[in-house]
Figure 1 (cartoon, helix red, strand yellow):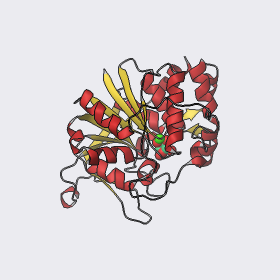
Figure 2 (cartoon, rainbow, N blue to C red):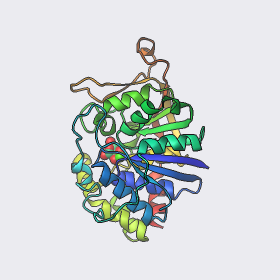
Figure 3 (cartoon, protein in one colour):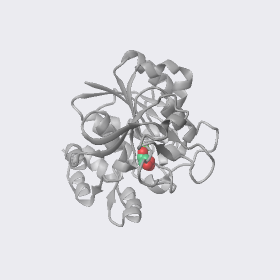
Length: 313
Ligand code: BDR
Ligand code: CA
């Protein structure tokens, strides 16, 4: 049984990721932390709580986390990708989330004690909450089994800038702390997530499904529009659900590299770039304190189909 904590900025693919965990027989979703990113943190918490209730998983606590990046800059959201409500205009805005009294950081630290050595964290938004947890309790690294980050890009360009993937770019200082820490990190970046595709056929199957499937269909329209601009066809990237699928063992990793990953925190065109020393030639000269992480470079095909089948049923 995988004990999983998801930390997310609940937009459209985050929602699919939460459902992927909820409907996995071998996973216990023990908490959801909300973080700013695609949208404001409160809306992220509302969207998370709503989908958990819809899926009959209202026992999963949702905790409020950071409202902006670590360095105190203003939060920049991604309404052009996920809509102003995070769900392409389909969010239930009057839903009153039953938030736990804890902050996302307190929840993460508590769960790390409760499930010491077992807890998996899937971080599918900016890494602000994880960085704050590290500074509150650096010993957390010893109790976490693995942190799976949806973020970064090793061999392909960025998506929010030419160099950077959105989750890392939103808070590079936080990402640097997370990647420099000694817990095992698996980076599920654009190298693999841009090979996923939720298609019009998937959309149709969801809309013919049960309440969860129909809800998923209802949030996809805006996301399709955005990806039509990026890919020239109605096929949306399934970033966050792929990362959760890897974290809980639903998706086999076919190729990966265990190397240091350095986050560019300079202010300029490279800000937020994940520099992965895939050839292993430069790590000794980098100040990475021995940190070595797994960069996923290829995954088994078929996850999108399997996910849709489960969500539509
Ligand atoms: C990541 O950014 C967000 O838009 C998605 O939810 C995903 O976590 C992809 O770059
Ligand atoms: Ca996300």
